[in-house]
Amino acid sequence: MYERVDIDADEFNHPYCGPGLADFDDDGIVNLVDFARLSEAWLTDPFDQNWDPCCDLDYDDEIAVGDMLYFSEKEWFELVDMLNKKLDKLVERFN
Ligand SMILES: [Ca+2]
Ligand SMILES: [Ca+2]
Image (cartoon, rainbow, N blue to C red; front, side):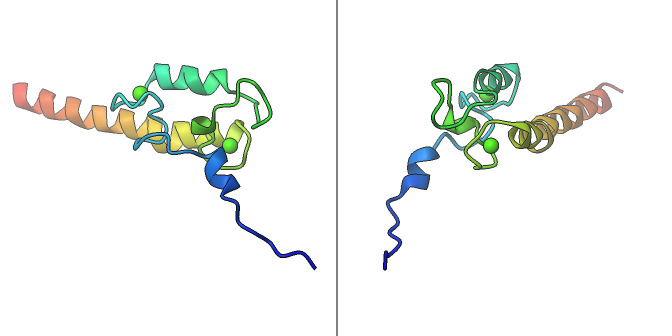
């Protein structure tokens, strides 16, 4: 009876937010500034005033635990791991 039509609504809810996913301010690092932005949008959905589609890292139309897990596991710890490796190289250089 009714035909399903793609009106690109998903693209509207999830606009391009930068190359670094959790690097919300696109400064090249994931840090507390990005975490603060996620916190501002915490427990919102597209109908809330503080909704921030860039923070919806698991694309489920809410800012919740899934986004926090993605932020901490995929982005934050990769950053910490990268910094630790660079620090190890610096320590090796001076030993
Ligand atoms: Ca950042
Ligand atoms: Ca989400």
